[in-house]
Length: 176
Image 1 (cartoon, rainbow, N blue to C red):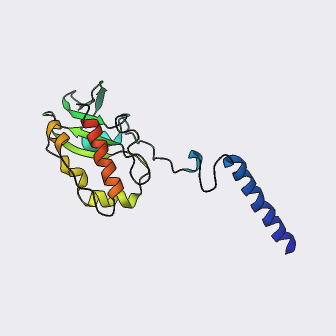
Image 2 (tube, rainbow, N blue to C red; image 1 turned 180 degrees about the horizontal axis):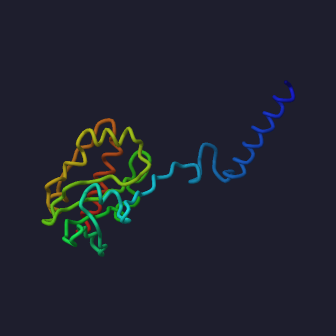
Image 3 (cartoon, one colour; image 1 turned 90 degrees about the vertical axis):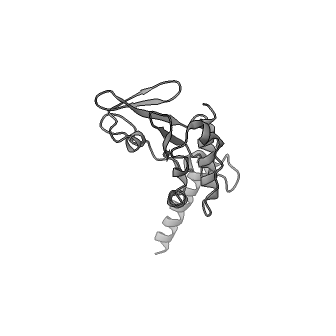
């Protein structure tokens, strides 16, 4: 029994030594990026189109990226609308756990039809509170010009997340 305890102690000490060697350059209580939660990977459909675009434009068959936005087309090559992404304009805007990049969907009249949170490391509980509050819908139906002027309230219990989403939306809209 003593031998098992001794072996367990040696194994535990070895793991601690490897961790210390790996992250020894940090002060106590700090972690390097290798230990931080990674954002979920972007998902694509069979046509190679991001699922965020598919969610916003269910009839999408192809896309064309321009300097300004992504044009979204159906199977007959008819323009359905536009998708604009907050990054890189929103880089550095952080919620509770990290950056909160968004995609904004626009119809042919360039009115917002949806704001979609892209893969991120925000707590799913905070994101769900923001969704449940209808936060992402408050820009729907607005032109870019009106959406740029929109003042939004944060969601109680998810203040950092909702504030960061609003700032990400504002950051990309300010490019127009």
